[in-house]
Length: 256
Length: 283
Image (cartoon, one colour):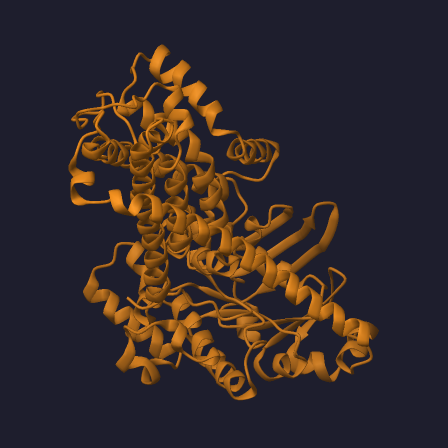
């Protein structure tokens, strides 16, 4: 990973604090994420990891009481600057949610909807849909029923469709908020394999409260506790030789 | 344990009694109306103008008047009400102003209809000099049902899961796109039902229209929005207040016509709901 560390990070968070009303959910988070890296954010429920994740594509804008301080820089642009259109931020930083949430439209339209809105012609749309579904390892299962409702797919298929939908916009970064928490182990395994594939093209930041998952898929692990970053490290190092007592207690199951 | 069972039984019977009582009353009402007015109901009754001879009196002008008022009311109140609802729920950010509007709209929905009649008389008939016309009637009716449509729209939008909005925002949709491409289609059946129920309320209203000066004897069919008019509810009221028994039969027959119209509109609401609910997802 060393050659990547020396490169310019794609995401930098600089003294990021997030408040819900008076309550501070995240305190001075300073992190760097690099191209083609999978970073896992772990920590017990309510530690602020999902809140932090949503700050990277301004999804906290939709929580009325949420307020963000500090800078989040994506590709050298402060995404909280007044001149930035959050809609464009979300095209660059895609998101996959905890529960699969396909649009109640056809499989094709789920993937094609967003690119179509950017004005792409139909011929290119077909290509985007096929490529995105292939990248999400779903193409073979749905190629014959592209125009059927996405709601007829299984949970795991729906989640892969949501991944296809996100990569159809050709983002630079994929945020995943506990993408496997509603899936069975087999579907989870497929998503994890998929993440390894997607890593070739994207930077992935994933929130998980499954430590085994973090250990299996990520290159870097960040441990949150009560809104603070306790420890950040290369994943194998992190799980085998944690530097902080809290980290060790958490990963050995003493609390959480 | 024994006690618990008796209470369980008791609540079941109380519920059953309530259902039987309300349905029973409804059936008695319908039976009574059909018994009284069934004989007067004929094609001539539909196509004849009112007359001072009960045997020749019909609801033609009232039927056309009702159609005119309802169609114009629909054209005025649906866009205004639905867009107000969308604005309130999807675009206006939470705050004192929003709360203020919401509370007021809820209150407006509970204002007696005759108050709207007074408002219509003062504003549309007099101040705007629209006269005792179909247009004045439709504007007044629109005011009456606007709060109901707004509330139905807001409720329908609220019932669309937040996760769908997030999904759309997450792929870089603007607020306008989220609302119009994703949320509104999901809310559509609910909005439809609300709108049609609101219109069904308007179709049976007479008080506000009497107040703005709808006539009770109209021997012509309105031909433009500025014509005077009557509606079924007023025609019914007029006949029912006559001393002759034969006119009472006509009143009952007019009620049957009104009930059929209302039933048809409610049927349409159910059909639209089922149709769009079934179509969700597949395209």
